[in-house]
Image (cartoon, rainbow, N blue to C red; front, side, top):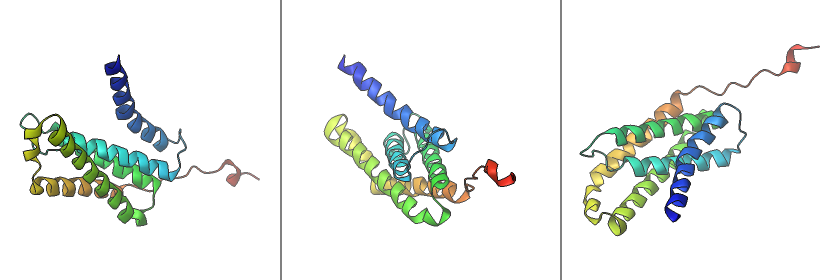
Length: 157
């Protein structure tokens, strides 16, 4: 029974964050800016945990998926904040990426796979942080401003 509850919690977190951000982008969900920042922080932590270590022996899909998630976070942050806020948004992504890598290191070191902690070299960490921050800021700076719909009363008499 506990397994199913944990599985439902994982599904709710992993599916709920992207769905909430997509509904916010379409205008179907009104969220305060701080909550959008918190959702972006959680999404970056999940992306960093899933994408690190960088070059697994099986497939590069984890890295590509993590970079796609970082790009989407950059897009949603840009739709929420103005272009002048690129530095705080970059700091948020950098902090969340470091927290995600730290959480994965702790889970490998203390928990599941102590031998996997050797994959966490400083070069790999810096490369991942540069790739993730670069992807986020690239989409943040290239995304257009949110266009507000014209009011119905503007054209009428």
